[in-house]
Length: 423
Image 1 (cartoon, rainbow, N blue to C red):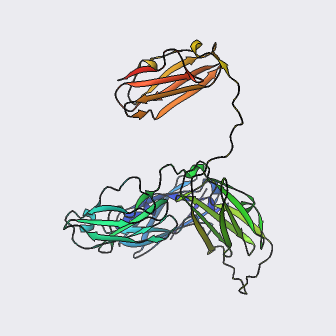
Image 2 (cartoon, rainbow, N blue to C red; image 1 turned 90 degrees about the vertical axis):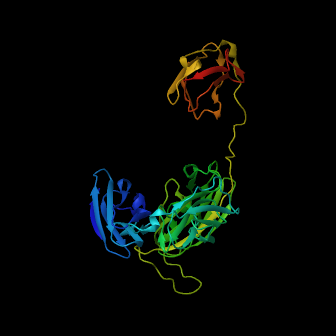
């Protein structure tokens, strides 16, 4: 176990990440970073437990972050514990699979993973042995932490196939082992469901995320509007387990729970395997211990809290707020002028620019778009410089003629659509 002092208090505000928290190779350095900036000053401890003793090294960068590396001699499954002020940080301890340094296992490769994997539809991909001998086995861990059934079988002397049917949206971990040893890069991360799921668009609010009282039911709302469909996972760690349920609301999902003892609770909210903004939330509970219907209630110490969790497969939600009506515009698109090289010629993978002058064209909304041989341009930026003067910047990533469309309100401006040559 290694200990160090870093630049008071909140373990749930400390985060860690890096390949050394997912996988490693025996005898080689496994690395990761720990960010403590939002937690303030405190004591950080690192532990690595598994088949062999770990040599741990770390470096305090003096900017609220630390670099950690460790080396283990034997392969197998290890648990990396990260504690801040003697409390585990979110997701700690981390489960890490360490491969042997050499042998046939290193030759094995995973084939291409299918795109657009959907819930309740079979998934299959190949595994190339590349001359390695032995047997393969596997498992699939869902975003909620459950294991899905999977089938691993040989196709011929040098290829195997893994099949499973996903039951949840979100990031799945696919574990593949050769003679009991994880193959390179295992466990693999695959996404199930549409790519438009956006954890950054999810937010949570309500009384259940602030101060609460023991024995009194409280709630909070997880707003998933405009975040797409995905897997919503809620975990509550505290002195006791809590009674928890979830109902669908117009803007998302309402989570209700009843704390049974005073103390601190930490509420983790993840969408498709990723923390939403503010997660995990720290909630202080006051009052006295509430007796359970079964009799005496046991209170867990802060270092080993009780955990309650639930998972919901969400559906697409759209924000219900909408403007009653648009302003009344009075404009004349024929009086709009524009200029700039970006209307004639564009440079591949470079910033291209032109300006639009609508000073004499009344008031309206400007629309600018760039369309190429393979579809719309990825990046188009419109900046209002004041007095109806606009600057348009865009980047093209495909060769061939492009079309630049500029509208003032519903009408094309003079010259639009423009034909642009990409060089």
